[in-house]
Image 1 (tube, rainbow, N blue to C red):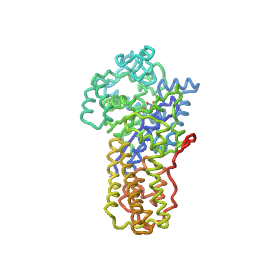
Image 2: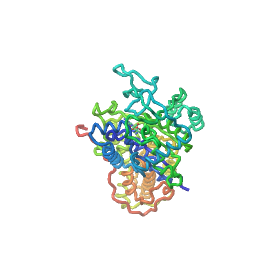
Image 3: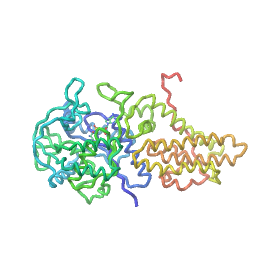
Image 4: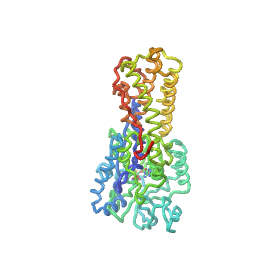
Length: 513
Ligand code: MSP
């Protein structure tokens, strides 16, 4: 029986161009989707764009383009960024699509039918940049002495008729849910913040706007458009053809994991579960928040001119070096800094040296000393068994790290084995065995090929392109690349293709070294 695995990225606002922060969550979700596919699960991986709301409307106005035409253009750019990063999404949803509008309206009706929505008037603070209502008590004093949102975003006083969602009525149920489902929110810091925010008391939430009209009409009252977060969150269901509960895609609900940035944890960990409770829909299994990237120690911002387009990094360093860096640099969940120096260092030390050289040394010895033919697997020494044992447990070890969203720990587990392989090759010195003990040389090289096969198979989700090349060089056929295939050793006697370096060292042009 294949298990369903449904993972989502946030849907990205189309008010500006895609950058490395957006690529980050998408790459992380992609690693999880690919991992589960290779593990044999039934995967659905969703990404897309969030196209309504005042922020997008204003960006379109500033560009002198109609909102839909503007959204079309920027949404295409997000899709091309996803493609450039090899994001293997199964669907790309846009909130301006009819299927989404229907889904969001159906969810609204369900919530309203269950008496969780009422008409009133909103008077209070709104931060356009965050598309978020803030209570007076949450505001802080900005650099110029004015009131700003806790995120630093400017706030404006809004007064308009509005539908409200009875969020306050869900406070106790939410707290009980967090308590009963300790794995629901992660990492711990985010969970702690959410619980303390909910404990401070929840106010009913304004869920419609009347002062502009770039949004989904509220069913039954066309004067109002839905609050962009009600609209946006519904994407996770509308992409599965909700409200058609008989649709084949509905087998993926409840979602296994919503991956989000820490700034949007509140919407996912409080509002979304409350909307679903009100609609009588099952809650997702997990919401996990990743940290934020700074660039060379500074906040990324248009005004500083340091916004990084991941496609530029890919052009310079190669796709897999960038994907690897993003997930390797800092434990997933924490904040990280992107610097050229550390990107080059990770590439040169861990990819080119630790893994690339190991593969190159092994495969060139097979080419030179074994006529390019994979030696048979024969009796193993204790050291051989020990090394291969470390490789064999990776599958289970990584699966449990993946369940915890510990993507960096999963990479560290693989690197421990890579370092063990390097110690093994140095100790066994197969190059010296050619004359003294050619049979043992064959055995050592075979053990190394098997270890590399295990490593490359398990690293495919992180670095799909280079691991594909590595597996080809190791003589692994395409249908032998799923995790379960690792149980069957490759038959000896296969002719391996001529080895070629996989991870070039990067040398700074201006660097005399
Ligand atoms: N449209 C909403 C999400 C709706 S989901 C139902 C949104 N969009 S966004 O485009 O502003 O942000 C999308 C994601 O990008 C968020 O998860 C946010 O954390 C992430 N990032 C934006 N800047 C970032 C960094 N500098 N670093 C890491 N992630 C960052 O919010």
